[in-house]
Length: 639
Image (cartoon, rainbow, N blue to C red):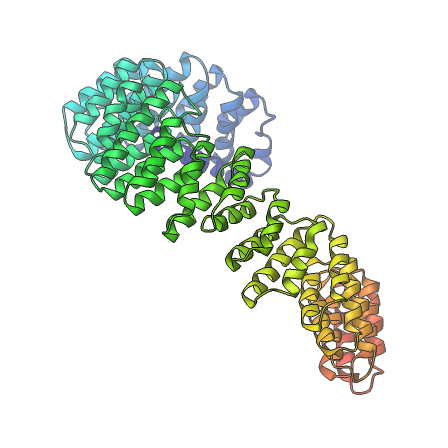
């Protein structure tokens, strides 16, 4: 968003406030307002203005005259300009009704009104953009009332003819109070931007120059400098560079803001973009050479932002040089920027940095390589894998995993490497790229690791690989088959992975483990089933809970079953039947009361029946009666 656009935001907010107020008045106006809606004709709307209707109705009529009104409405709208409550509403249509009549009415009103009413009319003249208003606005520029003078200046900036610009320039040169100068400068910046947009570049630059030379606020100077740079194009680059070196933060920030967008390679003439980039690169090298870290890092960020869709060779070369030759903060910024520009030409520099002895440099470089797009980069990394020495090999392996390069065949032999660090890096990378056919490699690494240091990375890699498999049923079958052949501790780990994968096959495997008679497996299975995310785990949990009165994990399984009845979206009859079965299996009072709470939470005829039946359970009579009463009360319509 340009600075000029930001200047227009207050006016936009005022209009939005008007619209909100219109809506409120429509609610208050009642039946009469309905007759003045968007379908009303101009004659019907004018009839409301001429009547004794409430002012709210007249305000709404003004609103719709902005759409339906013609010059015939001007005579009825003009008297309202003197009404403090309706003046703003009357100006809305007068600002947009075509023809000389509306302009003449506003001009006449500006000569006879005063105070806030006059201020409003002056603003409306600016909205109309009628050059005929310039002489009147020129006279109002010198008004004693600062609000009148500011409104006149604002409208001259909106009308933005050469004459209007000259009047604003003259007012600035005459000086005055800081408030007056600021209003004139703001209007001049707005006018210059409009002149530039209309193709009057020389006039725009001249008006900006007046603001830049005046004793105005830094904000106005910054706006004028930015406008000058944008208007002058290539000729404005030296001013951009000068502003980047400004000692004041506001001006320097404005220059940075301007540099991000000026002639970007994806928006403008390539030669202009190259000229801007060249100037910024020279500034970067100067700042880096002087040890000005903050400015150098800022310039790197600007270059990366300007070249976000792909940098030129010169920018890539400059960033690569900065990534190698300067202080660490500059190197880090340049390395990250090379990744942001997405230029594959940066790969060689980044690969060199990816194995740097400084861990911060290496980590940042690897992240930048991950961000580089394209199969060309993938192929280059795979090619490096075969020829890398042991010190660089872990970095190449990591990049294959993080970029998800299809290189399973190239990585598998490295699982037998003599270096444990390389084996761990390979396992981690395989977690990101291994396919179902080779999942057994990770299962073996996780269940029978060569060393403890490799066990945990292998388990995490197996989890990552399993949950991303497109065919989760086939994946679960592979895991379940492996679980049948490994010792109990490893089997528990595989059950945990099955719990992450989910699905029918995984559920069947957990059901078998839950009734296996082996404590560690039953413990794991009931723990995982208690967190199952689909309702099909309910029958399995109920079977475990009902298997034997003294089962080790009976209570846990029952509570997992009750959780499904309480939290999941279920048909009424199914939920009620689950509660009935839970009451039949539960042996602890706390569990039975939890079931009654579910019945009361979901009141319907089915849960009412179960609650009534529960009154026959010894020791539960009072609680069941209370649940029954609660359900009936909720089902009884209020009088």
